[in-house]
Every structure is written in C-alpha cells, then in structure tokens.
Amino acid sequence: MPVGAAGAETGNGAVGLRRAVVDAAAGLAAAGVASPRVDAEFLAAHVLGIDRGRLALVAALSADQAERYRDLVARRALRVPLQHLTGSAPFRWLDLAVGPGVFIPRPETELLVEWGLAGLGGRPVVVDLCSGSGAVAIAVAQECPDAEVYAVELDRAALTWLTGNVAAHGRGRVTVVAGDAGAPRVLADLDGRVDLVLCNPPYVPDATVVEPEVAGHDPALAVFGGPDGLTVIRRVVDRAAGLLRAGGRVGIEHDDSHAQAVVDLLCAHGGYRAAAAHRDLAGRPRFATAVRRDAAGTALADLPL
Image (cartoon, rainbow, N blue to C red; front, side):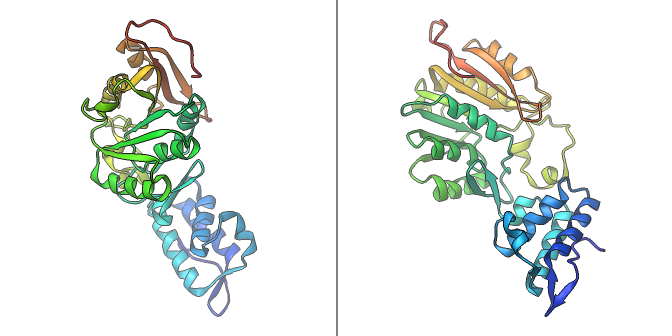
C-alpha cells in the first residue's frame, strides 16, 4: 500500500481509523521514520482534534479527514518534522507553537529545566540564553511563578515564535530580549544579580551528519556550534559568569560528544566551582552545571547540582 494510504472505506467515503493508522505506520516505517506508529497516531489525533489517548474511542475518519490524514502522513514520510505538521511541541506541561524558523524543543532539555528548578527559592532572577521557542524560559516561569525570567534570542525568525509563545503562556512573567547570548552588553543591567542561567545553545559540531528532520527543517543557526560544537558554549560560559551572583548557578546543554569538554571549560574559566556533568535518561552526556564563585574565589555553601 502506498505511503499515506488510509485503510478500508466503511461507507460514505469514511475510512476505518485503526486500519488507517496501521497502514500509515507501515508507510512511515518504510520511509525511515524513527517512531512510525507513534507519529501515525499523533497525526490521526491532530486530524480528529482530540488527544492521542482518545483514539480508541473513534471508529472512523470522515472522507475529508481521511484525505487530510493521507496528506499529513505523506509529508511526514518526506521527513517533515511531526511538530511542524501539528504546529506544536510538548515541553513539560506546555504545548508550544513551533514551525519553520525555530528549533523544536526536545524532551531531553526538560531535565535541564528540572535541575534548574530544584535549586530555586524566594524571588529568583533567571536567564534563558539561546531561548529559541521559549521552552526553557516559559517552563521556569510557569513552574516558579515568583521568578523574574528573561529569554534571550538572536535569530529574527525564532524571535517571532518566542514572542508568540510568551504571549500565549508567559505574558507578564517572561521578558523577551533580542540579542546575542554571548555579548557582554546583553542584560548588562543584571550583571551580578542573576540566580540561574540556563542555556540550550547550538552545539552540534559542524561536520556532523544529522537526521533529515534536523538537516532540512531545524535552523542551522540553532543546531551547529562550530568545528568542535563549542563555539557558542565558550561565549556562554563567559557571559553567564558575568550575569550570575556569587552562588548563582549555570546549566548548559551540550552534544553527547562533549562528555567532559563543557565541564573542563567551566573549570578552566576560574569563575566557577562545583562543575558537574549530567546524563539524560538514556545515559548519554546531556548537560553540565556549575556554581559561581564569589569575588575572592572562596567556597560558598553547596547548592543542589
């Protein structure tokens, strides 16, 4: 059956949903999609306007729905990201608008946010560098309502998505800042006052071969981080040191080829202590953290890392 074919008709052009999903999953698998059944189900739920968990309650797609489903499955088989087809990406408790021009937030980044939230108290000042869709900044603002959150993004296209997501989910709680995450002038008025800096920067080494969904759709500016993948991270390590108060924390996501490299950069900077590496749920190196030293470089009380 061709990719996107949608099951046997049940009358009036309607198509059996279960058969349609099975056929779609088979077509997506043949096209090399990593999670064919899951994606087929999400697309069906999107067409029906329901949660994926309610698919079992639906017997059939109408003729119009079946035609739309065929089109979406065919586009997914061409490796258009699922999130571009549905227009949204889940992140923690959020459902963020995404599409061409912005990096799609990944579940792995939720661990960075979880780490950051664990050490917050009072009325913290939080900065999200390389904010993209705003996933990190908005999640922090939602889950720590007393936080003063800033989202910094350079790319004009990504800023459009960021501004829209803040308006939808973080209005009045997240301040969008257009600027270079590594530039000393960006948020200079906050220097020495920030409690937490989080960053999911472009970190994939330039020569890396990435999956079609990334190569053809995620903006290169948000993916690739120079010959070794550390070009932006080096600048973020330095800028975060300027922003953080003594005892403030930084967390930076990185490529899984950077198991020790980012920790080494934090240690070599001289402005941090307690640098540590963290792995994701699959056991891959995922992000590094550190605590800002005081001006004299003396040790401060440990915070959760």
